[in-house]
Image (spheres, protein in one colour):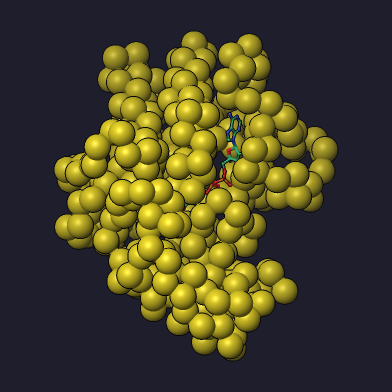
Length: 318
Ligand SMILES: NC(=O)c1ccc[n+]([C@@H]2O[C@H](COP(=O)([O-])OP(=O)(O)OC[C@H]3O[C@@H](n4cnc5c(N)ncnc54)[C@H](O)[C@@H]3O)[C@@H](O)[C@H]2O)c1
C-alpha cells in the first residue's frame, strides 16, 4: 500500500514511516520542516519505497496531488507543544484548523481512508480519571491562548467525524496522550527530552508549576504499532480512541527518575507557569487515559515501562 504521512518528518511521523516501510509499504511524507527535521527521515533515503515532499498542508494543489496518488492517509502535521502554541498562536490555529480541513477535503475528493492524530488536551481541565473517550471537555476562556490547541484539535475531530457521518469518508480519530522517545526534541516545551538534556549536562532541571501535576508517558514505538493496527481494522472506522500509558507519574517524580537513571547531579528548580508560558496560564493537574475501548478492539498493552522509556531516550542521546 502507498501511505501519505502529513508531518512525517516529525517525531511520531518519522517512526511511523519506519514502521510502514519495515512492513513492506510505500511512504510519501509531506512536511514543511517547521518542527520536523530532515535527519528524522534521511536514513530512509530516496529509495523506491520513500519520498519526502517539503511543503505545507495549506497548499491545496499539493495536498490534492499527493492524496490522489496515495491509498491511505495518516494526518499528523500540526503545530504541536504548548510552548509553540503560546508563542505562535495565529500560525498554529491556521495550521491546525485550515490545514486539517484541506487534508480532509481532498481525502473526501478521492474517497481515501484517513487516520488523524488528536490529543489528550481535548479533555482540558477535566481531572477525573481515567478519562474515557466520551468524557466532558472542560476548558478555560478562549482568550487564553493555551486552549487554542485543544479547541483546534476538537474542530479537527468534528470535521473528521462529520466527513464520515455525512460523506462516508472512512476516518479514524486517535487521541494521543504524552508520547515520548528518541527523536523528540525538547525545543518546543516537551518535558521529558528537556529533563534528559538538563540531567545529562548536570544542569538544574526546570519544573513548571508545583511538579505535583501528573502525566502518563508512552513510548513512540508502542504508539506507531497501534496506529498501524488501527488503520487496518474496519471496526475502527468512525470511532475515536485514547492511546496512552496508564503508568501515572508526577512531573516531580519524573524529574527524580531521570536524575536516578542518568546518575546526574542536577537539582530541581521550580518555575511558576506565568514565567514559563504566559500570565494566567492554566495547566491540567492530571491526565490518565481509559484505554478499555482500544484494548477491546486490538488488545492494546504498551510494551515499555517508564523506566525503559527513559533508558531508551538516554541511550539515543549519548
Ligand atoms: N507527542 C505527543 O505527545 C503528542 C500528544 C498528542 C498528540 N500529538 C499529535 O501527534 C502529531 C505528531 O506530533 P509530534 O509529537 O510528532 O510533533 P512534531 O512537531 O515532531 O510533528 C509535527 C510535524 O508536522 C509538521 N508540520 C507542521 N506544520 C505543517 C504544515 N503546515 N505543513 C506540513 N507539515 C507541517 C512539522 O514540521 C512536524 O514534522 C500531531 O498531530 C500532534 O498534535 C502528539
